[in-house]
Image 1 (cartoon, rainbow, N blue to C red):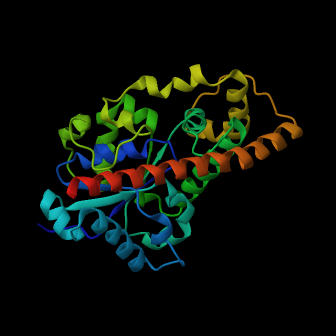
Image 2 (tube, one colour; image 1 turned 135 degrees about the horizontal axis):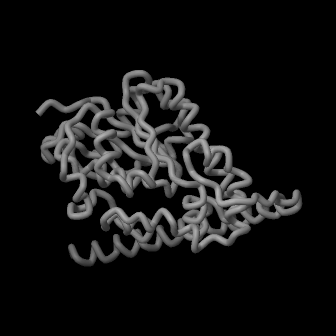
Length: 292
């Protein structure tokens, strides 16, 4: 089988639906998408395009214990790609891949994303103000990148993906120059090729439009107002409706929110890293016991 040497790049903010899109595309009979890589290692020291590709394939090889070509041949797939929300931090390096490579950007309602930031406690956005600032900065960076070579990009909305799955996937397939595969509509029946956890468990389920509305019940009216104050123009630019009156936060409130982010964000990150380290060590311990 002839392997396409040019990977697809999938981008988006954290909590925007990139993992869902990864799972859906990987259920296509001819496509494999790697779910996240060691970003710091891949983009270390401003690497060349060739070195970035080499490091990405090395990441996959380390997990699959096969070369990328052997891995894809084993799965009988010829097209591959990689998804990572942190690609946005390395757009300058990714510009080397234009105009030869394909990119997909998925955007999600800032209010839903910020709600998820707050609930997941990974230090991404500990409050509505700083979470909205993060979303706005990243979405603007992604769209500026896209504008530099529009034909290489497809922008889709998470809300459209879950409410009109087939329609959106037809667009994706056209962008990638591949045939539509009905198996993608049944992605939740296939085994995920990434480690599953609390934050991505819903990718095991059928598309659920209710997930797009959770922020309405979980955010307070003030939180919604703050997000719309920060990101309202960009929300409207992406065809999201605002809820109503916007309350402008006082300067002291903005200062408080930033301090809150700095302190609580660091606490959350350290907690999550320590929890991950403990889980990894326990898994290694029990794995060793099993093989002894």
